[in-house]
Image (cartoon, rainbow, N blue to C red; front, side):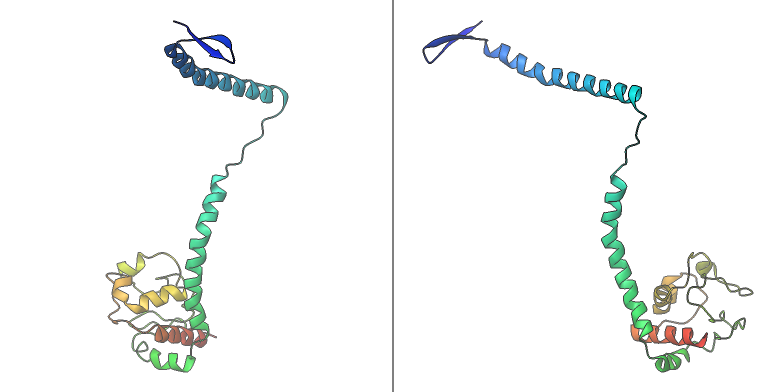
Length: 188
């Protein structure tokens, strides 16, 4: 059914509201079909005329950018302790080391109840030849960084459940930094 409408004195014939709704609903579907056909044609033209150019996925860059702040925060925390070790009082570290020397030697290859600590910083965890490590410590991958050593020395049984080390740990961060600085200095 058509409707008549007057605008500025002229009479216009309009479609029924139901027909207008059907036409409006059909337009997006037609537009999508036309767009898909146009994309297909472009793809065919590119394939026929030029070699295809691989698209670069921007997602890895966005992910890397999102990970950078987290990595920077972790590095800042890590470098905070590393800086603490670098500025630690080595003489105080020697005093703290007295708690360690009953079980650990600083001379290369001289194992005691515990493995020697010569060049322990940056050495693989549980890697001293000839020393039998507990399963808990042997299962940990990585190197003894200053941060790893600090975590271990804080509470060895929490760091490596099942460790044979009976030492309760060093609660004070300053003591851990000082003893690590002393151990490093002894290897030089």
